[in-house]
Length: 186
Image 1 (cartoon, one colour):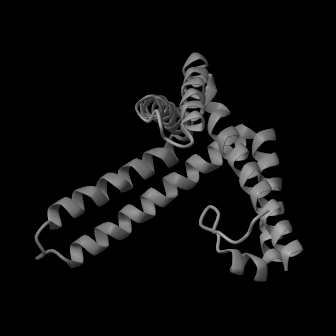
Image 2 (cartoon, rainbow, N blue to C red):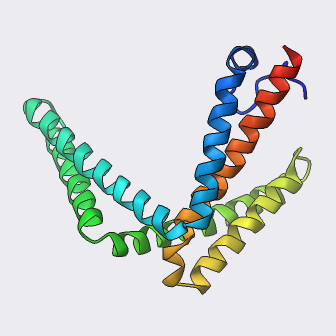
Image 3 (cartoon, rainbow, N blue to C red):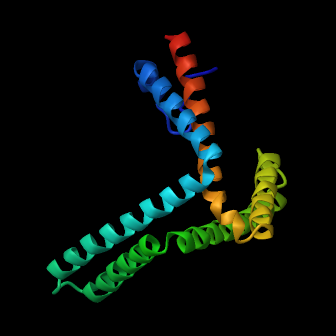
């Protein structure tokens, strides 16, 4: 593996120095990924609650900040935004199952629209390098959206956890591969 050029925002020199830590992070991500794939409902609910708390706390902090800048132009918009964030966070915490269903629906809509845009980009970029992978990415987005919509609303209980789990697995394997290559080249 060529470590001369940066890959995915990873500095090759820092990776060489910190290969052991990168391997450990890769192993942790793989373990979390396996757990998320095995227990997608637990991870879906946990992520939804985590997001709810982030929005609630962030909204409260934004409101405090907005009140401290009451004379600044745009204060009202900042206050409305902070109250909206806090309300959405509180609703996610109070109704986590409905929150998981709503978040899953939003993700499915995202995958649908993203898939369409990627297919359009592939169709328009006939001489674009990587056109095939962009096309395949668009197809996978449409497939993911189709699966979620066809299993609605029961898909909400497993979708977010499964997607996060697969992402963790892929990220962990990438880190392990890069760290191992860095150790060999050092």
